[in-house]
Length: 284
Length: 284
Image (cartoon, rainbow over all chains, first blue to last red; front, side):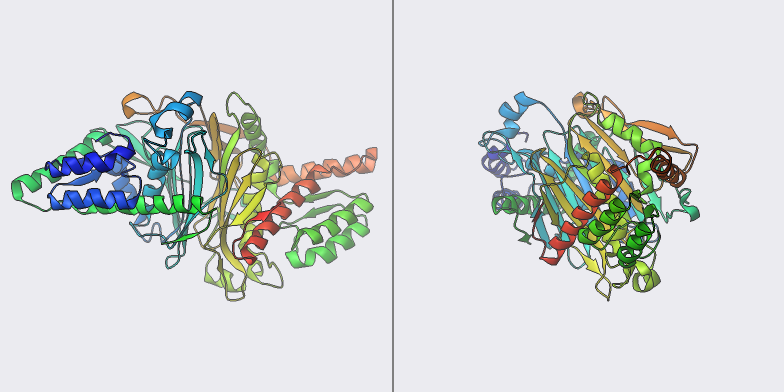
């Protein structure tokens, strides 16, 4: 369902009630209360819910997680930074549906920030942060819709920090940088790979600068991951296979996907709340 | 002068009063009031002041600035992220001079954060931010010295935001990522190059993802910059040439270097103040 966000609540519930499985554009809803109604409708009607964040489905994403989870190589996640930005120009900033308060009211936070928040939660194995704080520098268009914002996330128990930056007024970026205690994993095209059939990321482990500061003992390793199909096709394949399992084998819908969407939406709501309350921290 | 920070005030002033030119380890002082006394002593005695941030002197730094200042290639600086971290182990965290409250009391903020703040100010052409806010997730050792912290900087007039992360408990990182309106400039070894005699950075300009999301129209370009001498030697060369100009041509000491140190120290003090006041924003 590729409709503007403000139309999701009505049409997604209609679709679920018609027993249609639901692949929903992100951001999933204007807030988590709306999303919960959509997900409830899907559950009641036994249909699969998934949001259309395609990058989760690229095999590169899986390979990165495998390396991050290798505690010898990577250690614990200590910090994360993500960005998602592009600069579509003045006409977009005034007139695109993504900056209209009655259509995609969440602006750059909903469109670009959704990916950053999702990537940060992905790196944290879908653990909610303790505190979410929006940072100074929120920019809006004349209708009040967010064009740029950034935020800080903090996990008290894990002692992990994250920041992200999302914008409609910066050059194209899609950064994810995960800092571990023993390693670092990073890439600059996590949402849409530079090249579709062979995507890569960088990984460094056990690096130190050598004596006399004349270099590093270990250089970043480029890990290439081939993909036979575009990530969008892999997403549809995964969705179709879950639907098939429900239809043919009478399986229950996979709960991982609505849960992932819900956590992302919860953090997005917290950023929004922090912005609305003058950058006060929001405790989750 | 490579002494611990808390000894700088006394010995740096002594050196200046003996008409010795002063190349001072960073962080320059425990706070800007101390640094001002040191710089005043240097001015009164007509000696050159420079802090030992060696990366300013690598030719790569100059090449990056040239490309960032090219408004067609890069546009305006919209956001910056920097990190400086390393993980020297438990023995260091308890016993090194860099975590002793009576020696290098500024801990990771003074040691690693100095570079991040310096790099952010460098990218902003030494313009002070409007607001500095420390972020949740400050970690300290048993003596109360900072082992990890991060902060957000905001320039109101320029509508630019920056974040940095510095730590003694994360894998080795030295990131600088500058996001422009038309381009992106980034590197992962800005403090100590991976290889000394040929250092590089990445630069992307005018990138868009192409239709159907099957890739990007422009890939990051790797810009290599050769250097005949280590950056430390280049720093000494620059310092020596300024000293020679003072001695031989009776030039005045170059004010750019004490000014750069002072701005870095001012922002560092603001991060510290924000931490001490429960993460309140500090207006500069």
